[in-house]
Length: 314
Image 1 (cartoon, helix red, strand yellow):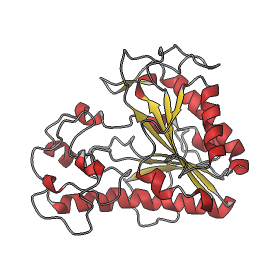
Image 2 (cartoon, one colour):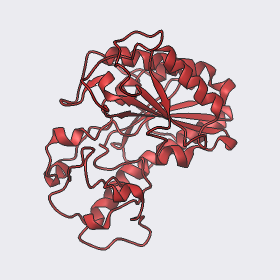
Image 3 (tube, one colour):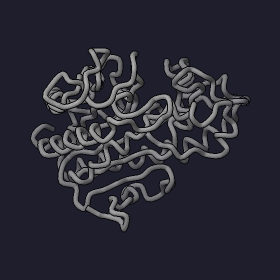
Image 4 (cartoon, helix red, strand yellow):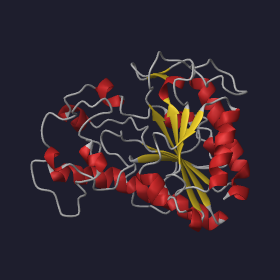
């Protein structure tokens, strides 16, 4: 694999997307891709634009609670197993790439929106469109109304480059192997109870029990529409083998990425993976907790198993 002087995998731009904004994402590639797998982390970006921070009525910590914090770090072993890792650098609260490009709330803007804008989706109504109105806790983000030009600039410099890179990765993987499995990795807030660390003691894997307070991981395949059943079975078994409590499609069946790119009949499979934040981070301070290294090791082993087996599954 390509390695920089720091010992970390070299960052490269997507070969099939030469005009992308260089700050929109990082792409870690192995020296040679050896499996029909791509790993993506669309919501772990933490590069906060100064203008965005100034326009927000919330402090940086409150904004960061909308992140799928550190998911890119949890998946950092992907290139070691011969598969690329794509991660957005901009934060989800700034621009959400797991939405359509133009899901915008007219109430957020001081000027009128073009006809192509989707202002009626359930996500927009909830305040969680491409440009979110609220953070995950429901608090409004902005001090003022925005202009459409601001949203367009974010979409053109964040959403479009990220999806150009993702589409290029899927296309080149499919061209090389005849198929592609995209693991779209996210994290989810705790449902209740005090924070714990490590996987649940529900299987052979290590880690303290969470007492059955909900799943450790939710797999979303759009209820079977985005990923073939044998692939989902295999990933679920690998995660259960690490001791995680795994649930399918409840409450997260997959967002825009899962539904847009997942086309099993064309041998393009997408599986959304939601990891409970309390397993690896303190949700109040947005900092890794004592379970971080263990969860990262577990996910690394899962990615390795999937990479070794994917050619026979997809």
